[in-house]
Length: 136
Ligand SMILES: CC(C)(COP(=O)(O)OP(=O)(O)OC[C@H]1O[C@@H](n2cnc3c(N)ncnc32)[C@H](O)[C@@H]1OP(=O)(O)O)[C@@H](O)C(=O)NCCC(=O)NCCS
Image (cartoon, rainbow, N blue to C red; front, top):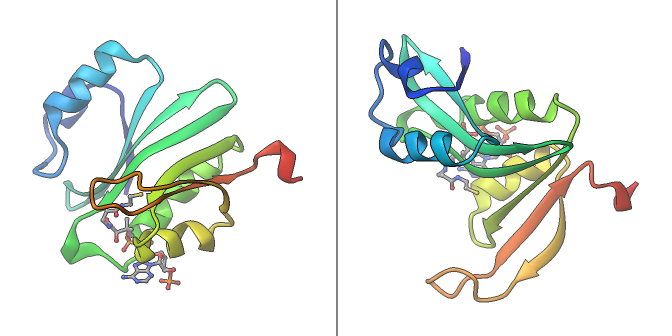
């Protein structure tokens, strides 16, 4: 089940050891565009996505699924929910992160730029997007 979290109080009756509540509390206070979507199984957070919903576009900050719940479409459900908002969506991903790259490709994301040596491990960051006007 998907649930939008708009305040850390929304997590109070939910089992959660994935989401850093200090981090999201700060983001909620400091950035009114910040959104959190969680994937719940038996009232337990097994996946989440953090994103910024900025007028007509969305930046996905993180999408994460607990290891023992991967490959069961949880990330797909969360991503679909965001894609259904019909906005331009952008994100960045490590060039070596094949599970994530495959996930985004499956939903039609395209690469529009590369940030070389972006990560501390020396890997490049791929900038991916969907519904970007210049591609249509
Ligand atoms: C990337 C991640 C969120 C995928 O979550 P998930 O719930 O397992 O993904 P789904 O089950 O919805 O998979 C959807 C598609 O992603 C791709 N995918 C997922 N896991 C994969 C893997 N281990 N290897 C290759 N492709 C994979 C496949 O294309 C898959 O479609 P398919 O099942 O038809 O083959 C998860 O692996 C994760 O939390 N990774 C660590 C955090 C991370 O790197 N996040 C991305 C930051 S940009």
